[in-house]
Amino acid sequence: MSIIWYFDFISPFAWLQWPRIKELAQTHPVTLRPILFAGVLDRVGQKGPAEIPAKREFSYRYVLWRAQQTGQTLRFPPKHPFNPLAALRLCIAAGSDVRATDAIFEWIWGQGQVSDTIEALAPVAKQLGIADPAAAVADPAVKAQLKANFDAAMAENLFGVPTLSIDGRLFWGGDAHDFAMDYLRNPAMWDEAEMHRVATLPVGVSRL
Image 1 (tube, rainbow, N blue to C red):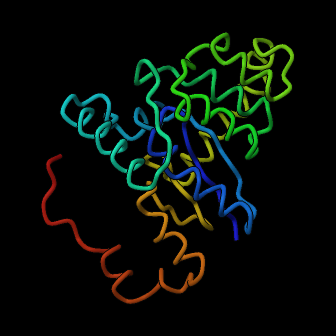
Image 2 (image 1 turned 90 degrees about the vertical axis):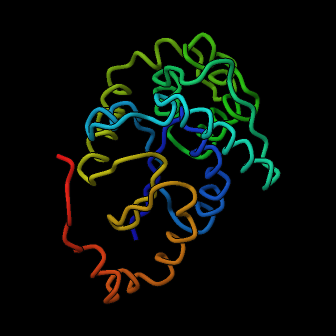
Image 3 (image 1 turned 60 degrees about the vertical axis):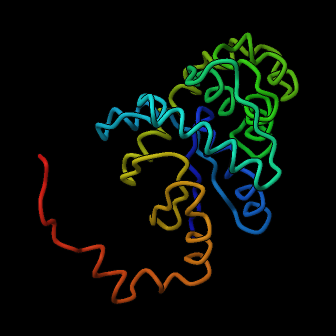
């Protein structure tokens, strides 16, 4: 099966799901695809949680609570939201593998460090063996790969991050991880009668 995890380092929800993605990657081949969440929001015409003041406050408290419940370290960076482009490009430059993704996530959400410039990410780049991080993130091939990741996400009709794509079936958010794992074990569940009925339910009223 094709298993792809779409994520952006800007998302604390992605950090919360990350341990389970690492666990999944130990038993299944998982493609890690960093993408720009802001681009997704622009494409689907939505605001992010941090762009709605009351939702922003709730979301921050909620992710902190969830981390406390599971014993996962979570330290917010000094400012949020922040520009994640440098982190996304650094991940791609380093191979978009588990090691690179883990190091960047740990820097941002495990340690709560600044990450909105490549200069701020210099310690992570050094850890990943990138001698000239500024040149690495400016590489046209790296920029092209980030765009290709985004285009792939849009081709799958992705609408948020983090999202697991399993053979083109989208499981949005860390709280859908168990749903995704059930599907992975039993893909036939997608074609059960009630699953099909609710997926094709007529729209009763629309605000548009």
